[in-house]
Image (cartoon, rainbow, N blue to C red; front, side, top):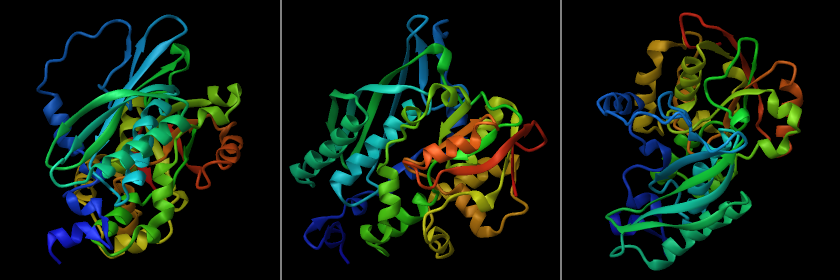
Length: 356
């Protein structure tokens, strides 16, 4: 099949065939990013800067006054699906998630667009931006502008600003020994969209994963104040996989996370896709990044691949007080059907994350 025919499928443009990598699997590998950032001399932080990128948290927090802090983040990537409207929805949900992962509420969003004017028709980007606009509206935020360039490949995302009370910020550094760990979405988007890119499946075959990626991670609005206070730490699971983001939480909090692999939610047939080697480069780089500091000795090969699977617009990993864990899961399941308790927080041990 020629490249032109691969891009055009049944008269429709297959966006995944226009790029080499898609979604959060296109992220720079965590170990490479860490090495690069260590060589950069950043400005001295203002005392109002409560959270920066030092612990690989999801967004920056800048205190405005005693009651208000800014939450700032940005995220963009190449197409992970073929349908432009759905790509826009997923890209927006993914970017908005970083604000929710800090306990904030998004208020403004600006588009980041690279678009190949010579090779893709105008309606593609109209649909992408409409999908993003739909999700921004769902989040109660405003789409206020952005920046675009003419580029060789389509890339889209958002810069998002939100607000949070400085005393109610969630970070990845607050997990406490004795906490329960809750994951709100199923795993497997990396392998399932790899199968889509290799044209082994159609979007309809993996629709549960696509709808999961498009779901907005607004968990705070589901909770009463007492339950919100029971959330001690949070992070969203994206390109570094469950293993990478869990390890980062453990390091930031100086604890060990004990995870029951059997309780990790996964999309239907995700293990079958992994068994059939629908993999990305990130499966390997996430393994290399994490396995020196996590214990996977009890896992079979498929579950090792699952924890390293690069998620796009994945769920939130929450560290919550044990007393609130079960009540919180029941509330979360009204919107996030896969939400469940997947482990607990232990005092710091030799390994950052132990999988059983």
